[in-house]
Length: 348
Ligand SMILES: [Ca+2]
Ligand SMILES: [Ca+2]
Ligand SMILES: [Ca+2]
Ligand SMILES: [Ca+2]
Image (tube, rainbow, N blue to C red):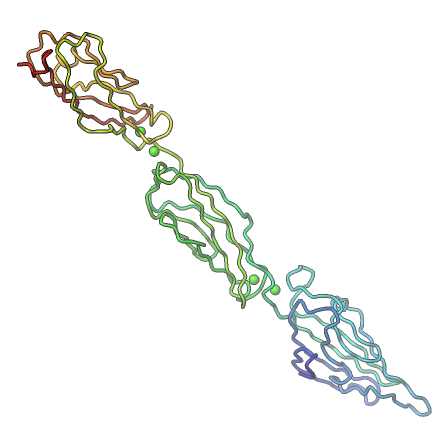
């Protein structure tokens, strides 16, 4: 380093080409990108051992002058014509797409009377971590059936980072861990896979946030939100509010009377959760001739007089079924009916 202002000078080689007039000199620098306009790189006269004092040639006295020659990279730099200070003229961004590479080449003509030196300058632009990982989409919506098997996965377009080396090396993580989903990363592929059974009725939506972190110091991050909607399948059976009901009815109960109401619920939405009731076929015909249940309301009623009943207890098996057109689920319960005489005594 030539001074605290001068950026990293890698080396200087100067060769005299002509005994008295022209020589070549090569200077090499490394500077970070994104330096401010005006940042001093070096004093070219000093670096190239070219005297900044006036020179004489016979009776003539000349003042040294310095000129940055036209090149692709020349617009990024300036050279003081008398000071010979090489400075940043335009902010250099490695990732702006205008640079053909990370090394820029300049040519500076230093002149004093008949003495001319062409100074070739090579400036390597070092990467800084000035780009955060970036996902092509900031939000991704996914629908998964609740009967998806464990291991089901879906891909996520990976993030990109315009920086180089570790500054552009990305690792992925979930902002907060999930009991249902894990990340999978293999080479350039990013995916989310299912690790637990989904349940529409318990958790119909999952929101994941994937964080992409680069390897810079300090690191930068990007994120994508994954909104996972769990779609329903008919996987719940109706549930009676109690497995056994105990009912006492009078043998004088008029035919048509409603004597009890049962209720079953089904957590599925739509037709898979609509419940209808019926008397089970797996019971004596007499039961089904004597009692009825309303398919929609679960109201139990008497459809045949009990005046001639010879039994005092009837275990009436009732069934609740959902109305899914493809897969129907059912469950059963028992209504224990005790038949009493008008005095409250069990008959028989
Ligand atoms: Ca980066
Ligand atoms: Ca960069
Ligand atoms: Ca159901
Ligand atoms: Ca369901």
